[in-house]
Length: 542
Ligand code: ADP
Ligand code: MG
Image 1 (cartoon, rainbow, N blue to C red):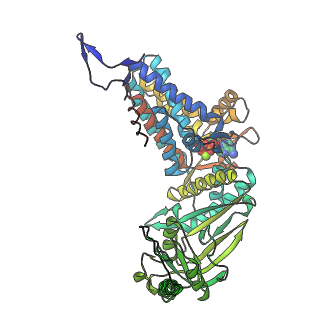
Image 2: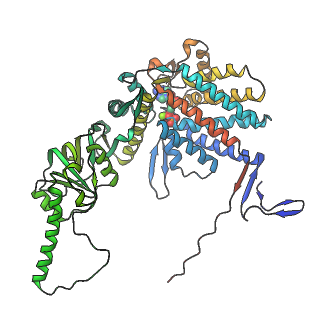
Image 3: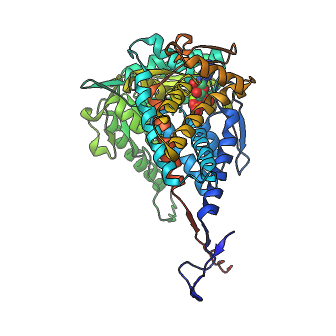
């Protein structure tokens, strides 16, 4: 039931909310919130794991996205319910912080809330559930650090396995191999050591997509790629030992804001005006060229006269470059972005070993390579179609973060449900030392974790009850702590040996985040929805 405001106290109407607002309280609010969370869980279940299925999302303007990535499904699904939106935010922040586990975090929230709903029905007080969940999460995270296995990030083989596991839930096997190698080759080059910690800024790695060819042709480029062609055909296509002028002013006669009409009644006057314009451009180009530059990268326009002059001086030039690319170039080449001719001098130029225009697929692109900053790298992604390229890009971004996670915290855990079943076992033992509602909550937490293994098995077409029973049995022995579901063979195997491994950081983050969000949702027992603002008044037509 929705209680409309005004409410009555002692027969007197008390107006505290705007007319049209609605309110849900107590059990009704909780039930509605839990239902929304369950719907999100159900939406994502079929997409979890390597045997999960794709979803096709059609946007409001008919744009299509095909993906298995949890965060993409949730972001594109145009979710309205405020509780469901909280889950979407949790998934997005998981993506931003660690790059993986975005489906798992949403499913875990949904399962924790399902457990809570059951306990509420059994008249367990909310505060006991909330404290039980916090306790369980703490116990799980500390157990996780004991289960986790240390690895040396420079050990490329282990790194490649972590990368492959993250990728194999999104892409076909051969593409996974190519991308896993790419990620494990690339990330170590941008790692910085601060004290005894590694810091990785994956923003240093630019991803550029170009339709055509297959994923196999994806290549690592040491430098920056501009999706642009040279402005003039007579310019050199390839230059070595380059000094780049990064300018954000136009090399053309600027049009004035005001529109003015000039009447010219003699050919002489017209010629003089043209000469004047040509002189201005010549001066402008001269100022840039005299700094000793041989490559001009311009954020604004370069007109025909200027193009010609630059080509005559053997200068290679590109125009209308995006601001974000200008900034990347500044970082990569050590050059300054110059906003007027006064700032152009030899000191302000960037440096690169090679600048070259190459034909990639149907288009031409400009490669700025061997820059003064060796940490500036680009991945040129190839794929047969635009949709495939989008999914490849998501997968590449995710795997770069996952490899970076291993540098940040050099420990891994076994995947395929192994770590969840092991943690569930540990939590159930911990629950035995507790009592009452808290005990039941810790058990519910363990069950929610186990549900990840259930879903992995379900999606692979196996019998989930049987799989989990066998997994539990295998985990009774200490030697069984890494046993998980090998979805290829359908057998239970040691996932560490099988090479299905994930960063400890991803698992830690998803457990912590899911608990925080679940408990936040559980604490809500009053939902007040403001009335919709009236539509803006129609403008009188003129
Ligand atoms: P998320 O968005 O949560 O990362 P995924 O669809 O990527 O969701 O699935 C991740 C789950 O799949 C993890 O629990 C992981 O251990 C499991 N997994 C990944 N690869 C395999 C594999 N080859 N065999 C079994 N489980 C796997
Ligand atoms: Mg994943």
